[in-house]
Every structure is written in structure tokens, then in C-alpha cells.
Image (cartoon, rainbow, N blue to C red; front, top):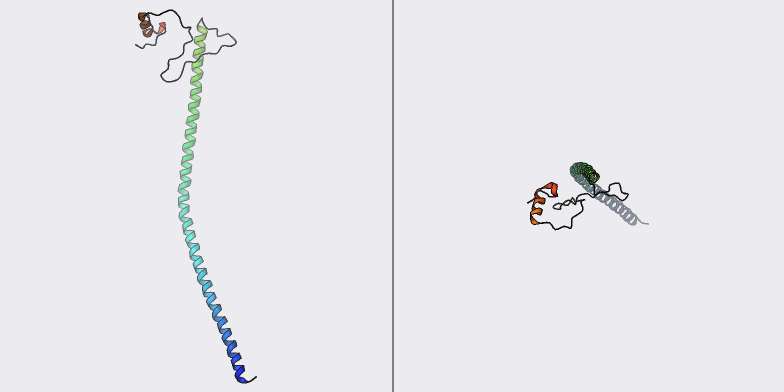
Length: 156
């Protein structure tokens, strides 16, 4: 091997080592730039999460308020149902008392059921009295409408 060839081999080896060094430096710079970009992206995600957390607190407060309102409405509904049940019991007691007083109603029969007055708005309460098949004169009908003791309702 002559010296010229040896020099070229050494130069080639140096060039290859320098190219490897340059490639490694470029790779590190890209890696550090990529790492910096990822750090920035992570910081942005953390800021977005923090902004979302404040909205989350507001949503939690709104949900809690809605839950409290629903609980209050449920309590009012339960109270209204209790009041309705008490009113129905009172009405039934009155009907039973009326049936005990009425000589035409057998309240001691096994199949006795008190007939509650109708509760639909605008309807007349049902009567437990038997209806008469005798014709009623207009004058007598007018008296019945005005006198509650004759089965009227005080309506003219």
C-alpha cells in the first residue's frame, strides 16, 4: 500500500466520522425541537384542562342546584299527595256519615260501597238519593234549585 492510498483511506474515514457526527447533531437538534414542541403542546393541553375545570365547577354547581330544586319539588308533590289522601278520606267519612243518617241506604250491607261525589270540575256531585219518577212542575223545579233542603244547589 502506498502512502497516497493510505491518506485517502484516512481522509475517507475522517469524512465518514464527520458525517456521522453531523447526522447525530442534526438528529439531536430535531429531537430537542420535537421535545420542545411536545412540551409546548402539553402546556397548551394543561391550560385547556384548567379552563375546562372552571366550567366543570359551574356545571357541578348547576347540577347541585337542579338536584335541590328537584328534591324540593318531590317533597311538595309528596305533601300534595298526602293532603289529597287526607281530603279523600275526609270526603269518604262525610259520605259514610251521610249514608248512616240516610234511611234509604243500607250501610251495613256486605256489598256496601260509599259513593263519592264526582270530583271533575264543572260536574255535579252524585247523589245517593233515589231519583223520583214523578213529573216535576216548573214551579217545583225552581223551588228545588233555590232550596238546598229540597235537593237544590242554590243556582238559579
